[in-house]
Length: 392
Image (cartoon, rainbow, N blue to C red):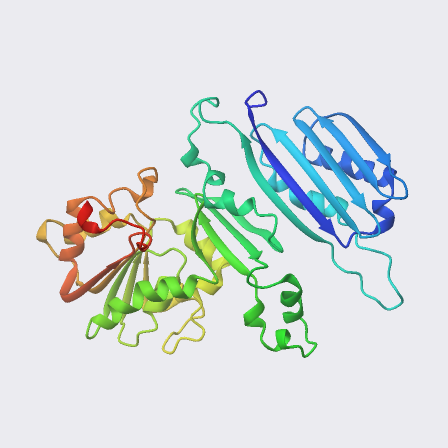
């Protein structure tokens, strides 16, 4: 991989760093060498130069490429550029950078609390992979999708990885972010205090966002969760005169289940989700999506544990055809069926035949009660610039 015309580029900006550390050629060189060693990179040579009147510039030549940084001691700031060739991910290096270079400022007046160093960063895939790396497929790399675009943003006030794990079916990433066009880090930090400020009295208005990516494709966010899932669920639930039995296809975050359970006519919700590990991760790292603590009639803190919820960890395609295929009905039908699966994608294996198999569609139809309603999301809304449906 080292010989491919491709690499990863990491840009890091940090402030509220101790001025003495930032003005010490020796300490900075030691931190750089420690970073290279802990990252399992290979240092070929390096040079640090103390500037006049202050500040330090360092550059290290790596077998994998280079690392360089410059400091502004009076401003407590450092900017870093790290580029590596090869396939080893660079994002896991970020905590090492924060630990080695994020030395809290000691330039304090009596009684003043040190400010936590703030780190903003950007990660970008560079070069060319397709056509050079054997068997490389862009759609299989999460960083080639929405996730990669988000990680390139250097302007985000906060961008923290919560979880990055591979299940048996997909890669799961969750990030916590603060977008300065929506809120600010200062407002968020005040909201966590008890200083009587407007922000501290209304913390919900200044919370950070959380974003879920599956195989690099954004699925939902904390700020957009309600708008999406309410629109998916409630029109169909209200359309049916008295929905008692509901099925959800997919919905691993638990938010669709949460919205369904808000209807007091519901006696049972069967959620058919193929990825049990995803549900477990969501319960642990995104509990807000499945929070039933404020829902009247719920008997559990997590909607996944509500007594009305039946969790089925199987392929929904097979599950519905086995029960309602060939015109048969092997169990009670549903008043409402909601498909909250991944978008249609020819490259995503677990999407399979959910959107194109006639036997599955027939099973869904046969699984509906007499006045049953079926709800599905099918991509983005058309704009005024899109051609009309009648144009084909």
